[in-house]
Image 1 (cartoon, one colour):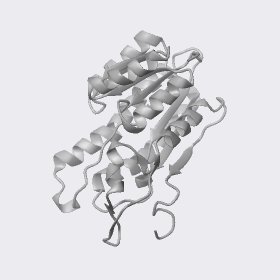
Image 2 (cartoon, helix red, strand yellow; image 1 turned 90 degrees about the horizontal axis):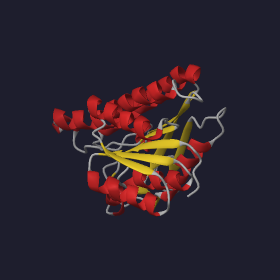
Image 3 (cartoon, rainbow, N blue to C red; image 1 turned 180 degrees about the vertical axis):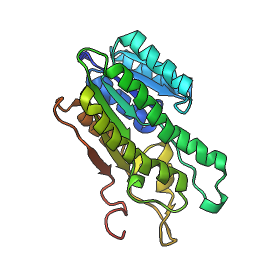
Image 4 (cartoon, rainbow, N blue to C red; image 1 turned 90 degrees about the vertical axis):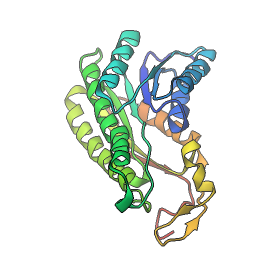
Length: 251
C-alpha cells in the first residue's frame, strides 16, 4: 500500500461497515486509526492493514464517553500529527415498541450515534483547524432511517434524523476552517448487524418479509469516494442501497 500522506479515523471500525471502510481507506493510502469498544476486532483490522504494508492504529473507545473520545484524538495526533478524514460510523439500534423501550436502551443508542458523532466532530475540528494545511473532511454515517423509519425503531430513527442536522451544521461551521462534511445513507448492506434482513423484517403494513441486501464493499467504495474528492468539492449526501429493497415508492 503506497501512502498518500493522509490520516483517516473510523469509529465502529472493528466490524461491518466500519471495518470494510477502514480496509478500503488503507488500500487508498491512508494511515487509518480504528476505534471501537472491543480491542480484539480492532487489533485484527490493524493486523490486516499492516500485513499489506499499510499503517494503522487501534484505540479501544466508547464514543459516548467524552474522556475516551479526547484520548482517541490525542493518540491520533500524537501518532500521526494530523487528521484528514473522520468517518463517524459507530452506532447501534434498539428495536422494540415505543411504549416499552427502556430509557437506558434509548440513551445507549443516542450516546453511540448522536453524542458520539458530536464528540468526535468536536475533537476533529480542534485538530483540523490548527494543522497545516488547515482543514479536513468529516463523513457521517446516516442511514435510510435518516429519511424513513422502520417499525419499532424510535431511538435509532431519531438519532439518524439528528445526524442529518449535525451534518448540515458541521458543513456550515466548518467552512471557515476548510472542513467539509457529508453524509452517507446506507440501505441494507450485508453485515453482522443486518443478517436479520435475510430472515425477514417487519414492514409498515405489519407483514414480515425478507429484504434484498447488497455487498458491504459498495459502501466502503462510496466512503473512499467521499474521502478523496478534491478539496474544493464535497459529497453532501449520498445514498447507497440494495437496488430492490422496499424504500423507494410503496414497496
